[in-house]
Image 1 (cartoon, one colour):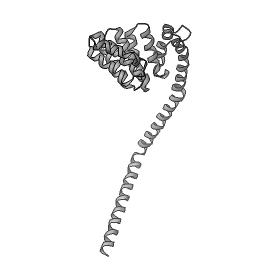
Image 2 (cartoon, rainbow, N blue to C red):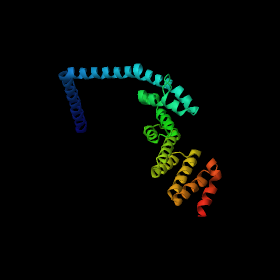
Image 3 (cartoon, rainbow, N blue to C red):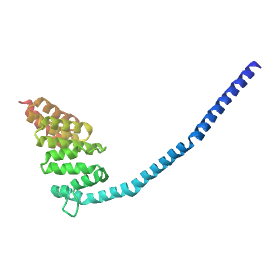
Amino acid sequence: MAKKEDLKEQEKLQQEKVEERVSAVEKFFNENKKLIWGCLGTLIVVGLFILGYQKFYLQPKKAEAQEQMFPAESAFRNGEFDLALNGDGNNLGFAQIASQYGNKAGKAVYLYAGSCELNLGNYDSALSYLKKYSGKDPIMAARALAAQGDAYVGLEKYNEAVSCFEKAAASVDNMFAAGYLLKAGVIYEEMGNNAKALEAYKKIREQYPQSLEGYDIDKYISRLETK
């Protein structure tokens, strides 16, 4: 009997605590209802603004930017890099698209613009675009890193160049990595660091023997080993 009475007493105390909490919440709401409704109203307005911004501004801008990209991409594929970068007065080039639309045109706009500048020999401008590229696709990200390496080679900043090539090779485990390693090896040779060059060449032979670079890599290795 004592145990049952204790359980009843505990249940009674718990019920009283629940009622006290509910009462406290009701009291808080009654005392602050204007503030609470005001905050809820603000949240609703902000939410509607965000939805409206995305639907009526951001999405149309993205569609417009993508439409502007087509002529520039066509010129790029044809090797007309100045036209692709700067446009022709009727169609925008990647430089104007990046300036006017930014990421709304897609992150690839920076890779395109940087590649155009690289092909035109404008290495500093190429780097400024390529460093803005932040795509998540590993193959494209590696390509952007390798393009930065090419720009650094053009600027004769060889330490930065080999760092980019090695990072590019490490970020993709496919045949493209062999090309990046070969570039790193060639630059290491240019720097007089034959040991690092040999290391890059041997990695191609061991990891990517079926790549285009892998078929000819033994001549690079033999040349250094006989020095």
